[in-house]
Length: 169
Length: 113
Image (cartoon, rainbow over all chains, first blue to last red; front, side):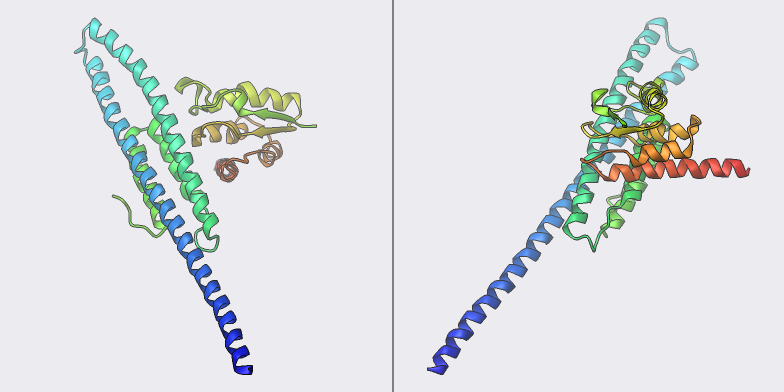
C-alpha cells in the first residue's frame, strides 16, 4: 500500500519537475529566438542605412562634377538652367532620403531597446553608439557626404561590436 | 502651470539643423516656437516629442543645445530638458541630454581658453 502511494507521489512530483524543466527550456528558446530575430532586424536595417548612404554619396558626387563644370565655365546657359533645376531636385531628394534614413534609424533604436528588454542583464541600450550613428547621418546630409558615410560605417561597426557581432564591412 | 508644445502640431517630419537646409529645421523650431513660448511662460514649458516620424541629431542639438548658444541660462535649458515628453521613444531624452551636456562642456572649454 505504502509502495503504491510512494509510486504515485513520485509520478506526480516527477511530472511537475519535467513540466517545469520543459517550461524553462521553452522560455529560454523563445528568448533566444526573439533575440536572434531582433539582431537580424538590426543587421538588415544597418545594411539598408549603409546602402542609402552610399547611394546618396554617388548622387552627390555627380552634383559636385556639375558644380566644377560651372566653375570652369564649361556649361552653356541651357545647361546651367538644367543644373539649377537639378539642384532643386537634389535638395528635395536629399530631404526625402534624410527622412527615410532617420525613420530607419528610429527602427534601429527601437530594436536595440527591445534587445535590452529581452534580457536587461546582458545588453544595455547603447545610447552613445546610437547617438553617434544619428550624428553620422547628420554629417552625411549637412556637412560632408563622404565623411558622413565613413562615419556611418565606423559607428554602425561599433554597434555591431556592442552586440558581439562581426562588422558587416 | 506649464505650456505644452507638441512637435506633431507643427510637423510630422522634423528637418535638418538650419533654416537654409530645409523646412521645419531645428533652428526654425527654436526661433519660431520654443523661444517665444519660453519668453511668454518664463521657461515653464513642456515639449512633447511623440508623434513625429523621427528626429535627426542636428534638429535635436539645434533646438535644445542651441538654446544655450542663443544665450539662455543653464537652469532654463535644464528645466526644459527635464520636462521633455517622449513616451514612444524614451531613449530620445538621453540623446538630448547628451547634446546639452556636450554644449556645456564646449562652452566651459571656450571660457578656459
